Length: 94
Image 1 (cartoon, rainbow, N blue to C red):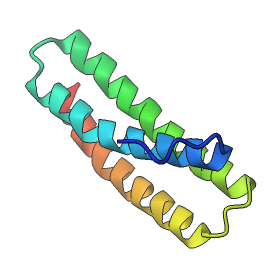
Image 2 (image 1 turned 90 degrees about the horizontal axis):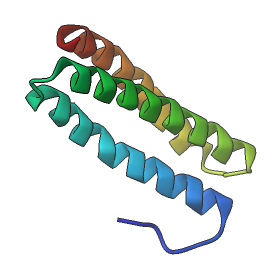
Image 3 (image 1 turned 90 degrees about the vertical axis):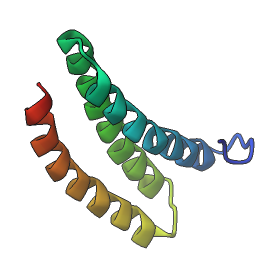
């Protein structure tokens, strides 16, 4: 799934948020079903990177003048909430 093929930096960042958000549940499922501890550890590390990237994209959108900051703030709030649950889940899977 891709946003319209735009060269706009804002559209590229928004598309990256969408792509990363889609990857998170896939990677969580990968950890759940993996029998290999190294694979689980690598995938958990990758999920951490995805979460950081989404926060960075939010900051980038804000700095590039996106006027819908209430959506960016809502996404940040949801990421923060997810991160708390994720930390508890992660400790059970390491």
